[in-house]
Image 1 (cartoon, rainbow, N blue to C red):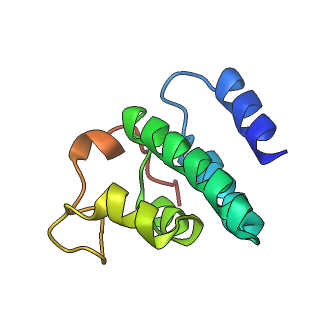
Image 2: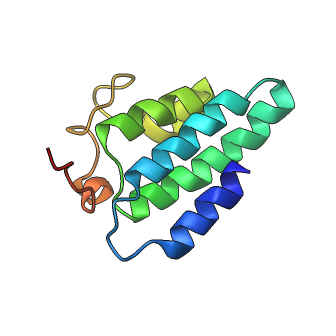
Length: 108
């Protein structure tokens, strides 16, 4: 269900729309679905693919980093962020600016 909802949201999204929240909700759903080892493996592949889409779309923000960490196995988190200087405490300062180029700040 989460995958279908994400795909629909991506199809409806306007260019440079603030999709980081949508991606974040998706990663939350993935974190909640990892019960058995087989589910963890299946979800891990999905999380990794969607994470790379987030990076390509420049939609990574601080909250999304936390949600990806919760949705990832230790092995996946190491693959995604192990080369960063402050691993395992990766922050926005550590990631490429291209990964966050389309994130819009919330209006207060």
